[in-house]
Image 1: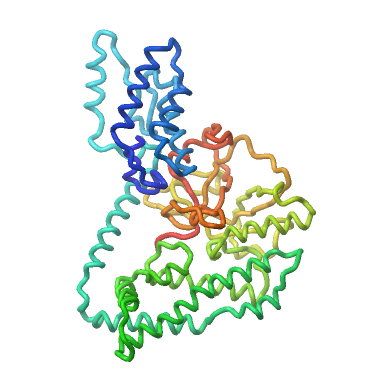
Image 2: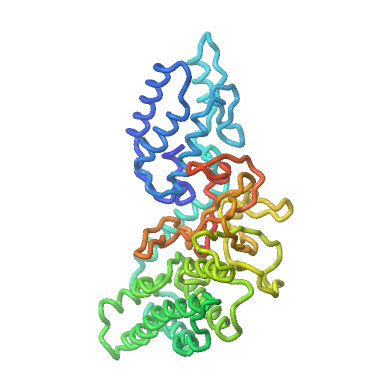
Length: 453
């Protein structure tokens, strides 16, 4: 189960670990030793050795450690010795009733009934995981084909140079119409004040986006001139032209931009939407509902929200944390800010969906890979008492790849925060001693700010 989850990509593991047969052999050897040495089976010891040392020794992501812990608890449990103990919701894989006369024949007969290819259910994943896996493989293949495309192009759409030139001109015109943010004027309109940390968040966001805008407004005219033969086509501009030709974001822009897995056309539309959000904020004031996916650095926004509450009530900020409330109201209909905290929108769920009828997480519908999460009220409180049941601790990421690196600020380049979503599935205490739900952990349920399209 640990090894085969890798074929489902980030749904299986955030990082594709190199598990091998040696890990399995060592785990089987330890299991044999402990079964022979103790009258009572030490399930907790076996779970710890396997999930944190044999396999877990390779696991470096904290969220993957939570996943491997619940997977091992499924197999290292007293119930596994009972006939009919199911390893998947459909009952395809279950504990084998053994006859004392011929136990080997019982196991062989059960193995013969197993399907040739294990479905995602035995790994705790939804059937949609097969679709997501196939889509990733297909998109990877198409990406390879596009990268090998002949440089002269063809067809009725014009040569590759013409296509790149039109795309560069369209993007340059659209971006020039928006222009870079006048941070000096914005800082005068929204000065740094003790009572409103969002003013600082706005200025910082404008500065970050200006770096990307200036890079694009510098390189796009150069590329157009190079395509027209007015200036020398440098190596950097040639690489940029190739990336634009295959609808990919040029590397020079990616270096200045936020994480994204979108193709160039969708990426540029998303950029325009982000800049429009900030411009609307500047012109009309602090939003009632924040589009969290539009922030370059959402962690600063979350810290600013906590800081506002802490300063309002004169609490130390390290004693304040968020409660999470799901609002089944379209964000357009919300006209007033909350008394404390913020309303946020723009998150997508993978692996599950929000069911407003039962006010709980629920299984995804067939062929529905991603669903929008309703508006969340991030409601701060001092010395908040964490829930003991009825919630799933859902990780929130910027993009679908899930994996990230620790930046110099101490924040991950991908992971943003944990949110607690109401759920009616079985509760358990996770590997760090907090209430959680194993069903959604094994299903790889997570929330994202941005998809691939």
